[in-house]
Length: 246
Image (cartoon, rainbow, N blue to C red; front, side, top):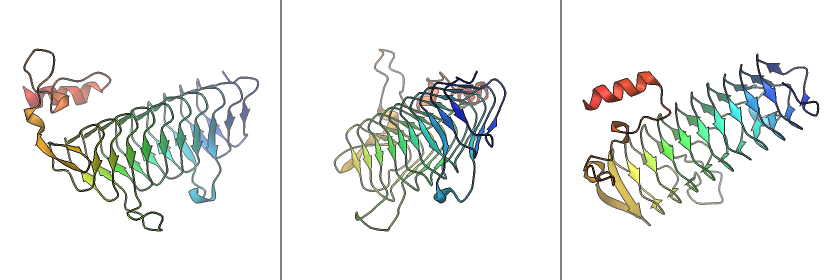
């Protein structure tokens, strides 16, 4: 299960049924859970003084695709899935079911909840906080410096069930509240209310999410999206959503 060209440090802790692809490096401060797949040319547990000696912990059932780099000092729950060429810096904590697409970039010191789905080319700046069941679509940027360049850090907060559409920028210190939708190509410079739709540059209030209907001819509401979209989520959560909207 470990390719002949892979380098696995003796100090690394490797679970059962783990596969490690060609030319990947597993550093000594890495803990890899059972049934994890690591592709080719990955670097797992890259040392950094900023981690203060904390290990990198990858939960069970992860799929880490080729050319991805994980620094030591971060912790991930079960069923992590990455695209290719992902970079995740130190002191990031993510829950179960975290997905981050190709060329995703997390700059560290971040808190991410359960079943967060980030598409390709998402940049998450330091000190970002992302809740549970959040969707972040391609080329979204979460910023953190209110007057760059400076030593000031004001991370973005994205609350549960929020959706950030493609090519949007969330400016430092902004909170996108529960169930809100940020439209594509938006620049968000102030907090977004729960279940609100904002769009534009600067982003402005458009309507409540309940005004948006599915474009499938049914006339049903598109939001909250958990009313109708259940693919890839745990059965317990789906059962709660069905009960909520029944």
